[in-house]
Length: 63
Image (tube, rainbow, N blue to C red):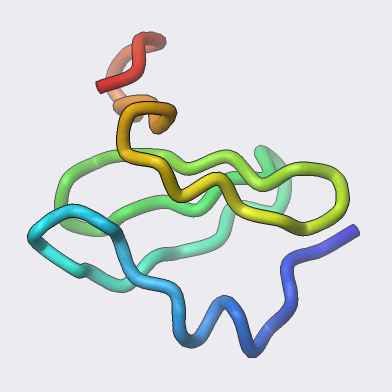
């Protein structure tokens, strides 16, 4: 399942940057253009926007 296009338009990064997110459909992740975090999107199209669960795109660990 893909992420709803309307949801993609309104979601922003939950950090202080509030940057627009890009959707990587192959990885099922929302990618922040400012802080380099990746937020997972589950198979039902529900994004996990918790900062503590996000991973840094340059590493495998969450921050």
